[in-house]
Length: 522
Figure 1 (tube, helix red, strand yellow):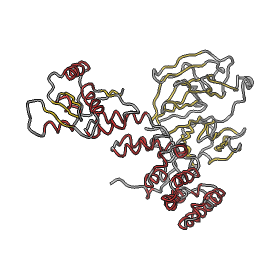
Figure 2: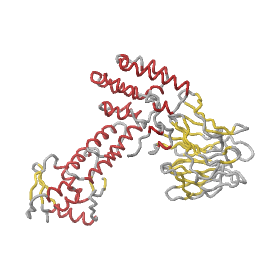
Figure 3: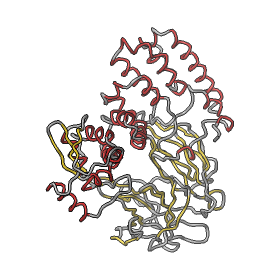
Figure 4: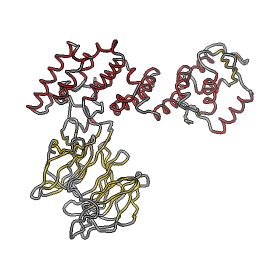
């Protein structure tokens, strides 16, 4: 059951709902009969008016007859009308996968906006790769704007799986398909995914759709694909070969690719639709650290699709290094650390949507070189150095209560350890106990490590004589390490966090347009 309030602001107490419903069931004081086929439903006009503009107009736009009137209602089944009438009295409606489409149609027809809202809530909760396209179409048809946007974003964010498994995807119109694949927000790791999705869509109805390849192919950012893929998978594809209009598109893509390889990425290239990177789904934040001979408050965001770093420093945040960081429930938490004078127990929370920092409850102990992990909605801080000794203590932060709680200590004192979660447990491995490096599990990595797009990123660090701005990533498919774009500053002792699905991702992504290209508000 979805318990919802009338969109008209009409709200009855639970007792009033029960009393009016009992009167209706008993047929007492009823002044209207709704007749659907051979079924008659007794009701009170005033109750129906409170939930439906349709009935309000029907009952108030003619003669105000004192006797009970019978209204013949068409275009709806008796079962659906019973649900709408029940909603008017009880302010709740049972929505399930078997009745939601028919109920939404009935609620839309008779202007039960509260029921429309309940249906949209239910459909949103049911979004998955196999039904999201159908829900998007349904929301478009009934002008459910919020559901339409959420279904559309779901499609963009889960496109790879949808294009692979969804039967509804194959039924998209050309216009709707273009509306999806042309978006910068499309979440794909490789542009070949878009090309293969286009082929799957065309193959579903080749006689009607083959001619559309020349419209769809330019939506693939082909200059970002490898030359081998273009030559072997795109150029030699039978559908592409048979289209004369595709040849100049491929030639243009190869020229742009050559320019990219010679000159490197530039804003000019980003304006070229064949070379414009998609927006990143996940942003990698590099926070603080030690740069030169002092800590820094610099925050940089890595745009993996453009392979560029963007400075997003918030000046109100003070410098710190050797701190821990964790992402939980839409916030980035920075714990402990050192600013060359003080060792911190304080914890700061960053809201990436508003780009603001807030202080939350401090830890029980000062900790730098701290190990951090997230498990079951809580943050765990383990070990570290308090300015005097290495620690074996550990504590847990609950964001709901804003409280830290001491938990069982580790068997050994350790700082600089790596920590992760696996199958409901936290593992703290390696590290330093003040005298020697620990080998109690596996080695600890000396640089911050995060995963973005299934790639393992290692950011910054110390080379033995100096800090570095270098960034590398490991691709387990090829089992090779690759260089990514350098950060803007040299630093070690920083912390990193992966932040997914930001609604304001443009603020953290490399600009795709030059300033004069950005549309101005009227």
